Amino acid sequence: MDKTQALLVLALALFSLGLAGVVVRRNLLVMLMSMELMLNGVNLSLVTFANQMGAAEGAVLVFLIFVVAAAEIAIAIPIVLLLARRRHTLDADAYADLKG
Image 1 (tube, rainbow, N blue to C red):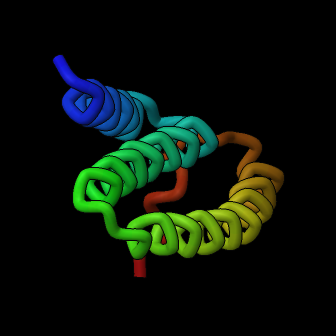
Image 2 (cartoon, rainbow, N blue to C red):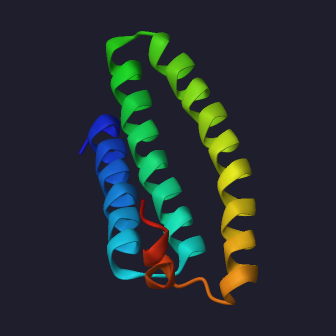
């Protein structure tokens, strides 16, 4: 197995682990961490393909994705913590009435 295949297998494992965490767990913070794992798996595959093609655009795109993900987490975590203070739980099913 060469380096590209090993990195793609690792990216698939990260994405699968994150997907399993989102589907199985109902804790909002664990679900956020699992979504970040999925995003990191996608970023790893993007960098792997960019490296294989010899293009620098993939690395720039991954940097932009990291900036957006950091902003998303900076907004999502305080929202989740405010909801947790109000309902005293992090269970995702407790917030079903928030659907618009």
